[in-house]
Length: 154
Image (tube, rainbow, N blue to C red):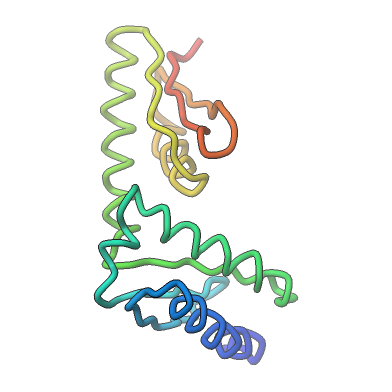
């Protein structure tokens, strides 16, 4: 682990600890540095709350950590916050959804819009279909209403 990554990991711990405490959340966390990423694993009594509403709180904590600490790092380390392996499971769900949507579009020729989702989830869908013949993807909408649409390839 580089000295800078070690310093960032040390700085994030009191910040995140206080954030969780002030939010009244019964959660603990581990920071696990890896390559250009610092993984933060949440666990505890309030994990259901973190994962409710499409994991909106999980993504909010992730966004906040990156906003506060990204610029403190000359190498631009990103934080990835996870809870109960949600991200891995969600990625598999999104890939399956993308493939099913692509099949639907190929059969019908009608665009298929997915639900609004965060940028990291939209990216999973785009990447899942980047080499899928007969379809293409676009993001549409703004802010919290931004979503992926699977379109027939023309």
